[in-house]
Image (cartoon, rainbow, N blue to C red; front, side, top):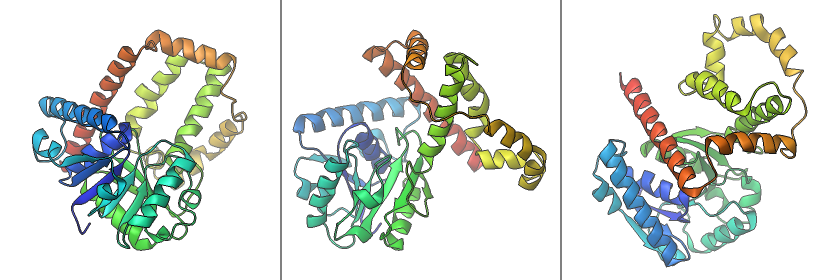
Length: 316
């Protein structure tokens, strides 16, 4: 990035998390929203999180919480918010028309070197950026929720996105400590959600067919597959579980096809299975704001600890 200033459009959970990621990377951040009260609340939340993470040793970046917090300012004027920014990350609700409206407004006020990026998790770039004169500068940078604790970012280009936009975005994400991956073309659900939905779909079928309970199903992932997937992916797992990929396919392809052919149709995610899963989950974690927030905080602390461990392992 030629400049050290970015703009975040939207101060919800994702916008706040992005602001913290960029501030940890030493960037000045302008956080935009239409309501001052929303921005005031966002700043209070960011300061609180930064202080807590500094105290627990999980704060990212080399500067203090106060130094990082000082890099973040807020603005209710869109033009003023993006002035001087080389990178703009949109984080508004997952609504195509709303996002198109925002990008339409940005398209009228940005220069030819600014990157226009969206946090969308499922809207295709070809739909999101259709008709924009700065389409070559547009890209999707889809984070994992919350991006401060989970570093993956899927970089998805519009068919007309300039390759330099992809490369600059990739370099920026690396610079601020994220783990970017490039998709060569857009596809429904991108990659993370396609993998996630495949797991959810089979999990739903297994519970619905009475093969396993909802809580035991989650345990299969958290204390089974998830243990190794935290460090290596499914392809490397195959590689290591035999004498290389070719050996794995030779040994296990017949069994894999046999199992995969028993998979049922895409579930409806409704009816009795919803009630069954809901009962199990609410017994474990009651749907009460205070309880849900406490569990989310616990989750984020676990993710912070895992991220710290992975960083230490990479440096050894």
